[in-house]
Length: 118
Length: 114
Image (cartoon, rainbow over all chains, first blue to last red; front, side, top):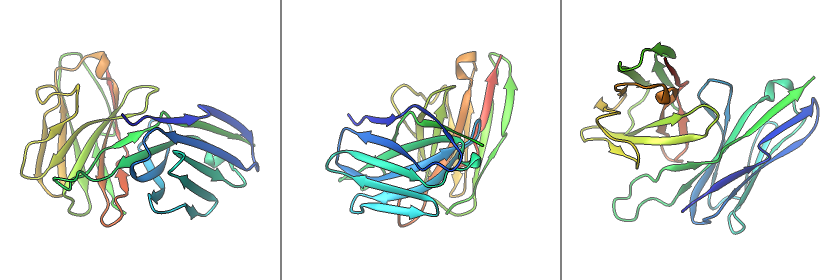
């Protein structure tokens, strides 16, 4: 059974710091891994999607890496800003079902709650 | 990416009543997903809704409690029936984008049951 763990659970940093959020998963047979941002009481915003064949993806100040063999992904945030304060969730999706070819659900981590203070 | 609209964005309901949440997508999608996020928790999949067939429910969720409709390729509803305070959660609708398998979410419906 796939389990997704995110460390740390909470993080507080001063503005301008570079920081790394960690995500680990127990079953390396994944289809892709996705990082999301969630503001309090709101829905999820997709940040980065990494396919199983990829090593990293970048978007602006965000860089996500994937090491499938070791079951790890990191989200790197450069030059953090107060507006980055949110909960960051990672989720993994397994390979499509072989018979039906259908979608396999995402398994979410519990998230890292980030606070960036001025 | 897909633009997903949910209604209501939030509601306060009385115990024993039912509430229907609507999800509208700006493009046609095969599968729509309903998630629940209880306070302080991560997301749990309730069910997968395919157009033209009954929804597929995850373990721990049943149709009588969470009936789902999927009348066309851009719309779905989730009803939370006979609510209790334990149903207080954020309910989220999501879809898979084409080609990449990226998952997109609506803004969520925050439900408080008194």
